[in-house]
Length: 293
Length: 251
Ligand SMILES: Nc1ncnc2c1ncn2[C@@H]1O[C@H](COP(=O)(O)OP(=O)(O)OP(=O)(O)O)[C@@H](O)[C@H]1O
Ligand SMILES: [Mg+2]
Image (cartoon, rainbow over all chains, first blue to last red; front, side, top):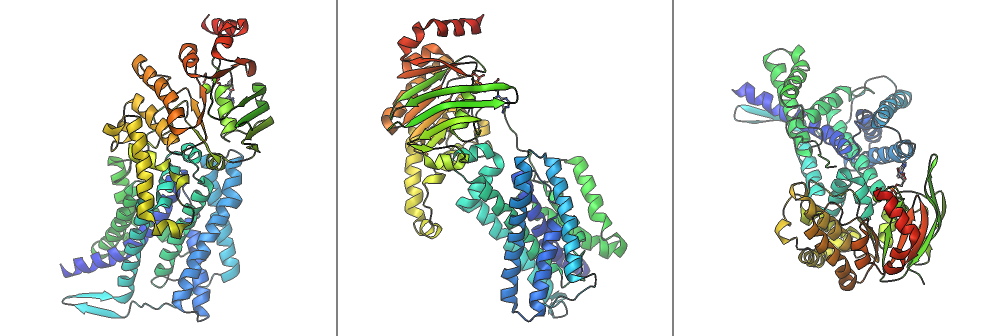
C-alpha cells in the first residue's frame, strides 16, 4: 500500500506537468483546430533560455518570467509571421498542421546550432534529493514543487477562461469566429494571445521537467507525446479534460513502471488511450462543437 | 452628412459579378430595404459593408469615413452591427452570455479601470441586456443554451445581440426568413420599434415585398448584381422592371 501511494505521488507530480503541456495543445486546438506539433520544441527553446540565464547566475525569480515571456513571444511571432499569412492564402487545416511540423524541425535545428547536442544539467532551486518524510511516506522537494506549479497553473488558466472578459472573448472566438468579429472582438489578437499562453504553459512545464530529466534539444519529445496523449484522452477541446487526461497519464505511467516493469512505463499509457478511444472516440470530456446549418 | 454612402460598388468572384456599380445613400434614422431575387447580391453587399469581403471596386463611406480595408471587428467598433442570413450564434453558450458578448465593445478599454469598476460596469451592461431581453420577450430563455432554443427564438437572440451593441447602423439579413406567419408579424413590428426605441438606422434585406413595404421608408432593388431602381415602396411596386424581376423569379 505504501509503495502504491509512493507511485501515485510521483504520478501526480509528473502528470501535473503533462497537464500543462496538454492545456497548451488544447488551447490551440479549440480555437483553431490546429494540432500544434511544434509545441514541445517551443517549450524546449524557452527551457534552454532559462538554462542559459540560470547558468549565468541570474536569480530564478527573474529567469522564470523572462523565459515564459520569451516562449510566448516566440509563439505569437510564429502565429503572425507564418500562420496568418498561410490563412490569408486559404491554407487548409491539414496544411497548417504540416506547417507546425516544419516549424518543429526548424526549432530543433536552431536548438542544435545554439546549444549543441551535449546533455546539460539544469541549475534549479528545487532538488529531488531533498526529501521530507511524513509517516511511512516520503516527498521530495522537486516533485512537490512541480505538482504545485502544475495545479496552480491549471487553476489560473481556468479562472482566466471562465472569469475574465479575455476568456469570454477566447471562447467566443473559438466557437464562431465570424460572429465574434462582427461583435467587435479583435479575433487576431485573441488568437495570438492563445498561441502565446499555450507556449507559456509549455515552457513552464519544460522548466520543471528539465531538472528531473537530462536537458538536451530533444528532452521534450516524450513529455510532449504524453501531454498530447493526455489531451486526446481528455477530449481535445476540453480544458478540464486536458488536466484530467494529463494526470491520468502521469499516474498510469508510474504505476505500470513500478508494478509491471520499467520497460512498460511508456507503453501502458498509450495502450490505455487506445482502449479509451475505442470506447469513447470523443475522449473523456470531449464534445464536438455542433454547428447547426 | 449621409450616414452611409455606397458608391460604384463592384464585387467579382472569379467570372461572376456578384455586384456591379451599385450605389445608394442612407439617412440617419432611416429604414432602407434591399430587395431582390435569390443571388441578386444582397448578402454580398452586407458582407462588404461589414468588412467580410473587400470589394473589387467602389467606395463605402460611413459617417463620412471610408470603411474599405477595415477588418470586421474595426467596423463593429465604428458602430455597425449585423445579423446573418444563416444564424451565427455561440451555440454552446446561454442566451444571456450571447447577449453579454454583444456588449464587448462597450466595456471600458483600460483594463485596470475596468477591473476596479467591475461591479458598476457589470451592472450597467446587465441593465442594457435585460432591457433588450424584455423588449424581445426572451425572459423564459435567458439561461438556456442557444442550441436548445427553437429557431424563432434563435433569430431573436441574434437580433438582440446586435441591438445591445448600440450600433448606429443595424444590418439585418432576412430577419423573418423561416419564421411562422405569426412570428413574422411580430418581428416586423419589432423592427419598426427598434428604430424608435433605440434610435438607430436599419438596412434590411427581405424577400417578402408585402412585409417590407410596410416597414421601409425607401427600397433599393437589386437584380443580378445591378441596381434596378430605388424609391418609396409605392414607387418601387409600380415599377414595371421590378414586377418583371419578381414575376420572372416566380415563373
Ligand atoms: N464567397 C463567394 N464565393 C463565390 N461566389 C459567391 C460568394 N458569395 C456570393 N457569391 C455569389 O454571388 C452571387 C450573389 O450572392 P448573394 O449571397 O449576395 O445573393 P443574395 O441576394 O443574398 O441571395 P439570397 O436571396 O439567396 O440570399 C451569387 O451568385 C453567389 O453564388
Ligand atoms: Mg442572401
